[in-house]
Structure formats: C-alpha cells, structure tokens
Image 1: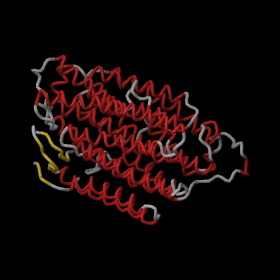
Image 2: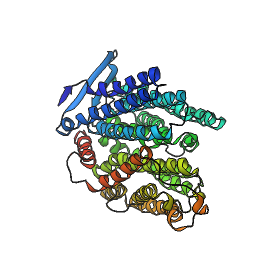
Image 3: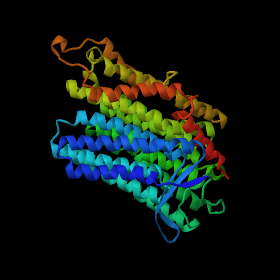
Image 4: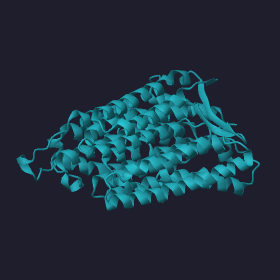
Length: 496
C-alpha cells in the first residue's frame, strides 16, 4: 500500500541542511561538531522510523516536482531502497565520529570543506536509495560524483589532483552511459518509474534491449568498480581514510552496485532477463572481478591499496548474486550491501588508526603491531575471518547464500568461485594477521605505539562487533537479514 509521506524528503533535506550550516558556521570547531553529529543522528532516526511501516507492507512515496512528459523528481521507499539507506545512514554516524578524531589536526577551512561535502555525499546517497525513477536516481548519482571530488583531492598534492582527474573521467563517463540508457528507456516506454517486475516490454527488438542493458550496466558498473572499469578506485586511495571509507563502504561503490540492482529488478525485471539471458554475461564479469581483484590484492604492498582491490572483489558478490535471478542469491546480494560495508569500513578505520598512531602504511611495517594495538588488530582479525567466510560472521552468510543460489539455478561453477574467493581472501589477509601477532616488532620497546583514542577506536570496534551481529541475527525480525529477505520476496513477488 502506497502512503504519501514527506520523510524520504526529510531524510535528504537533513544532510543538505547540515552541509549549508557547516559551510556557513563550520570554522568554529564546536558548531562543526554539533551540526555534523546532530544531522547524522537525526537522519539515522528518520530512516529507522520508516522501517516498521515498510516491513508491514507500506511503501512511502513523495513527489517533489513533476513535468511532462510523465517524468519528475520523486521518492519511493521500498524494502530495497530502505536497506541501502539504513546501511549508509548508520555508517554516516560512525564515519562522522571517526572523522572528528582523524581530521582534527587539519586546518579549519579543510575540515569545513570535508564535513560539508561529506554531508552532501550522504544526501546524494539517500537520494539514490529512495529514488522513485531512473531520472531521480541519475540526478543524485551525478551529484554524488561532483560532491565526492573535493574529498578525493582533499590533500591537494599533485598525486591527489591526478587521482581526482582520473576519478572524474571514469565516473562522469559512467554517468554519460546512464544518461544514454535513460533516454533509450523513456523513448520506448514513456516512463522512467521503477516497477517490480520491470517496465520494458518483451516485444522490443532484442538488439535494442541489449543496448539498453549494456549501457546501463556499464554506466553503473564504473562506480561499482566492475573490472575493467575499476582503475579509478585504487588511485583514489591517496585521499584521507574517512574519504576512503566513504568511497568503499558508505556511498560510491555501493551506489553503483545499487544502480545495477535497480536495472535488473525494476527496469528489465526477472522474467524478461530470464528469457533474454543477458545476466549470464554480467555473472562472468562479476566472476572476473571477484577473482581478479583478489589476485591483484595479493601483490599490493600498501595496506590501503590491498583494501581497495579487496573492495573490487567483494562488491562483485552483489552483482553476481543479482545476476543469478534467484531469490536466495538475491538475499545474498542485498545482504552483502551491509556485510561488505561494515567489514570494509572496519578495515579502513584500522588502517587509519595504524597510520595515525605509528605512521606505518606498508604491510611490511606491520610486524608486531598486534601487540602494540591489540584492540584495533583484534577488530581487523575478526573482519578478515568474516571475509574468508568463517561461520557466525557476516561474510559467511554472503558466501553461503550465493552458493545455495548457484545450485538452485544449476550453476555450480559459481559456488566454486565462492570457494576460490575464500581461499584468496585467506591468502592476502592471514599474512597480515600473522605479521601483526607473531613477528617481532623491529622498533623494539622504544616505539610508543598504542591503540588510538575513543573517537577512532570506538567506531571501528562497533563496526567489527556488528559484523558478528550481522552473522548471527538472521532469525530476528527487523534485523538486516530479515529486511534483505523481505526485499527479495518483494522483488520476486512483483515479477510479471
């Protein structure tokens, strides 16, 4: 049942208001903290308030503006969009706390720019999550690109500006493909509104349908870092750790993956794609990214770059799950939005804590760091085990349901991909854990390194703990797994 409700617009407006207030009064440290934290908590509260109604079957809608021919800017809160918004708004709170500690030594004007554009990025992400149609999604998809650029170049070094240019070339190019797909869709069906079961008719020429599918998947695949469209992501690691967390866990790559989900389920629909077979190619592209990203991660000597290539691999779990067109695999795809988000942000938080407390950024420099920073490395180890697929942790659920979904459609080779991925994850995470705990610290006892203060330590411990929560609460109502399962049920129940 659809209910007109302004809360989707309110959730978006809170972040925009936060940005305006930070830009206007943020040179005062206490105002900057007040606006950033207050908006993050308020937005989280608004998004959570939508959960009971959506789980009860309500769909909240709000149209901001309409203009002919049958297009407009509107918002719609269904299970899938709410799940993405819940993940991003929760991680916004945690990243804000972490950033307040990590960025406090930066100049005041640099912090104003960071927190202002950070709020606009999260506003764009919520706009993507709650978009009622492809036009609204496209607008906020491009706004996310523009608002992220100042964060990527935050350090203002030549390397940062090169990374920023590369980021814009890739992501604006991807946005151009989405715009082309948008025009092609509207020219054929006269609407851009999402519809469970799809909006494209099977009577269209297969070449035309293939063109639409290709340009939309490639357009969203750029931000999702789908190989070979991934080149911007490792380069962008020159940005500060909170920006890396935003790129990998809160907004950017997830926005790309979310766009792919909307194309599959709400533009084409499961039944039509099952007839066309287009998603088989996407499944193999995702497989290349899963294996290729992990192989590249093995050879990275910089910790953040290893995390970047791991993201390329992990986000493709979402694309693989969606491409199998199976309810069980769809649960894995949606759930992995949260599983990968909380796990990867933990690792980036730990990398930032190590850098702040010891100045170490290379993997070879991490010998003995586990004894120096026991809480931080305990969180890192827990998340590494989750990525490997140890039971009772979030990563196990993703792999398990992807394996079940693969067998359900008699594509057992994708189950093999999950096994290989788990082994590769072990190959590039466990050596770091071994170094941290079992190798002697070459700095000896004179190196005064320890866990960071609570502004940095608190968020990373919470995220690591939530990886356990995600892996052990599948049976509880209103918990993430149940929301993902309801989203999959809604998507497949709406198939034509």
